[in-house]
Image (tube, rainbow, N blue to C red; front, side):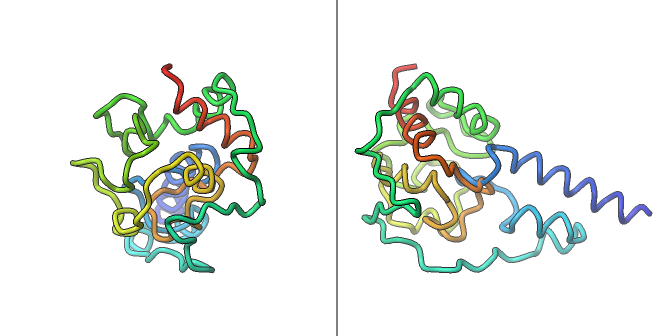
Length: 176
């Protein structure tokens, strides 16, 4: 009975972390497995479970093609709505310069090299991705982070709606 309660507690903790919008966003020091897999594993197994293998190679660092075919240039971002969508991100990310949380600060993320904030523990995959966060690359990443950076520690599944992604980017660019 105690083992089952531990499994349930672990599952609830992982789901709370995954609640950052229902998927995966920025890199965070969390288990390198899908939440569902961790919830069914024992605590010892969950802490040592390897990352799920990527089903396909990551797009090149300069490739910005999305799974849904959407182009950021075809959308007009709404920073007000983007702030509402960003609420799910702020459980792990701050917009304050130098304020890292579970995930790194997203202040000034556009134009920044992936994995470059000093003092934040990024995954090797993120640090070695070769990505510079342009608006278009961020648009692609927000759709399905694990596709763009396989092996990321971030457990956020992504924002499937192109308009939501455009809105978050508009919010990140706004002077807030």
